[in-house]
Length: 45
Length: 259
Image 1 (tube, chains in turn cyan, orange):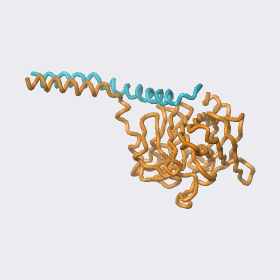
Image 2: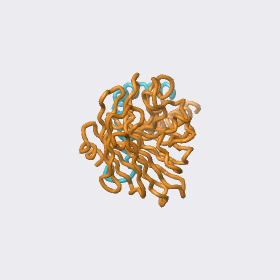
Image 3: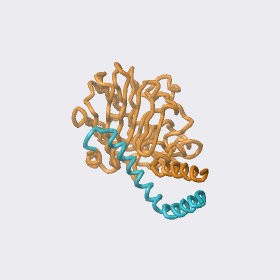
Image 4: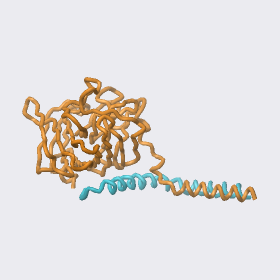
């Protein structure tokens, strides 16, 4: 921690968690995209 | 027409959902009630630091140091267990306060005296990597965040009051050995060897203060070892920042963690 910028470290900690959670999300993304497209198609037509 | 409108609404709603960060869905207070034994404080993924408030000093439901049903915070310590059935950690308790010097946490007198403070869940928040609370007894705003091996405290004191801080190495565990000394006017190093679940746990730390204290008082045990320290920073500014690096090996490791 080279400086006293609290907001910077707070934001970096949040980003680290966000990146970890995205790893879980990417595994489910493909399946969800397919479901979402089908749902949109059903609603619109 | 209605279908197109519905389609438009659906697109808008779904795009809002996609822009939301995943951490917005995380509630660190889940598990802090009942028998969850988790803590709500600041940490990073696989981080060494778990900087979190301590509201409970013993008991099975005190394994994480915090219980949602409690109303008094005794301070913020740098290591916590999550989900265990045996208590440990709670190393290096730091607590900001104002007013008369208080060496005890106040639990024995139901917090009539002591440095512990009441708090309310209405003025408490947490999300991944961050925790904040208002300590109502001292009217101090506390914010915590962390990196992998370093804890970062930010305290906002009331105007005109002397900013005080206690470092308590006797917190929770049985203290076997301790050390606490100034390296320079705004840097401390020390160690705590304690016994709880682990019978001989070594914890080393370095504490960097954003400014030098105007006065310092040590409390020593019968062996002449410093176990508590009260610092007074005066009232020239409402803020105080503290960075704490830790190691389970030695003080040099703690210094590297703090850099």
